[in-house]
Image (cartoon, rainbow, N blue to C red; front, side, top):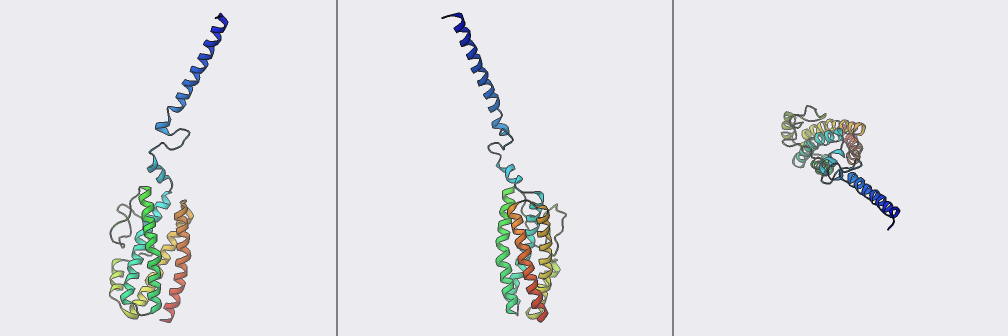
Length: 208
């Protein structure tokens, strides 16, 4: 074999070795950093958190106890309301808001964020300083629980109007600041549905 042939084979072997080393260097970072800026395998929790903006998290954490209180108020109407339209409206509120509570709870769990617990009148998670507009106090709820008939109807409608207005305020804040598609869609639904219910409640209240 000529000297020239040996030199050519040595050069080709060197090129192949260089390519192998280069590929190994590129692939070596994948198990730890995912490569090319993509999440590494097993990094789902951080990816789930990244799907929600802090505004989305706050929206869910505040709206869950807000909805829970509305459901609690509406359940009282079953045995206390005198006006059939008040009873129907209360059932409508429960039917709409109970599934939304479950949905928002699922979001927070998926995002790895705390889910509100305790009584719906607490108004915040431990350590959360944000108030929730429209929430009734414990004293308000006691007065509502003690009312019956037309007195209950008037109290329920007056309180629920204020409650819905608070929910709409929070939903509009989510539309302004949030970026999670599901949370924004729910916020839009809350604005539309609860504004319609406010209009209905005002009409009922005017004739009582």
